[in-house]
Length: 328
Ligand code: BTN
Image (cartoon, rainbow, N blue to C red; front, side):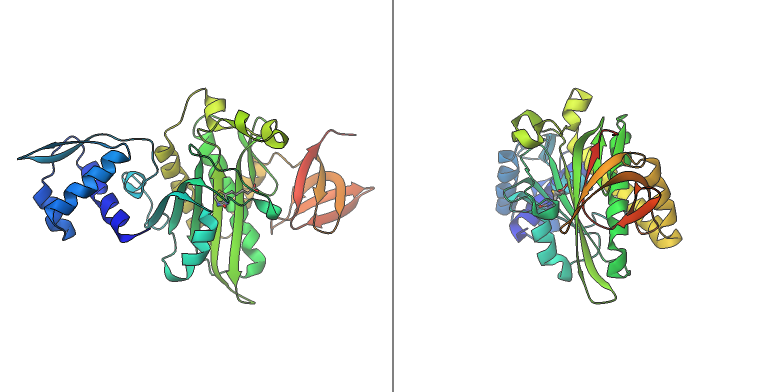
């Protein structure tokens, strides 16, 4: 995010904090160390984005209404976290928030979040594309947990739990398909792509990319995923307030992350198991090397799926694509 946008959303933050009141141009100019003419230009730019800002010569600017945009100022106003989201990098459109997050991760604080209104090259798991139109929630969280790369899948599972809990807070019956697709009534509403950079024995950083079909029309999706996808809008019958959703999600993610650091992975795994849509299902697992069929009977302490592939024979799957099948 460039410096001009940073100042613009700083002004918005100040207007949001005093919604209903007037804030003088002089005060804004003084606090941000810019001229009053520059303040005016930023106000014009915010108006062009859909923020209704009233102005009167002597008393200043007052925010009358806000559009449904995930701007840093809007997300931060009312955000209850300490670490996650303390810095938010925002893009109207970008290739992929995961790509941006990986580029900046080395030089930003843990908890920085990259958000885009739309992505032109959204990335899914196993090299797939991720369709990311306006109305969805496309974000990447940068964290720097002091864990070995071997344990990175714990973060992925933790992220799945945070999304499922957030979706459930809207009264929707969210479940998690291994490893971390969030489903509502069997249809996918969210995908998670975790990427790490690491030395042999320690993670440098971890980028948790979360894509949620919030206010999108899945009818416009390509045929191959149309039937298996859903959106929050479709399930709820009306659009959701995406700013509020992101605030709840970052809050859930942070509390699970702090719990993970304090009490270890078992409480998170327990929550994951309780929300699992996969345990007890007949599944087809496709990995780079092979395809395996079996009954999913559990998830081990590392998050690997435990399959019974026949006559009491057990197999552990660390990574792969999972499809739920009809029981033979
Ligand atoms: C999946 O294949 O299920 C994972 C999809 C992950 C999509 C999200 S959207 C935000 C972040 N940026 C990306 O390019 N991908 C992830």
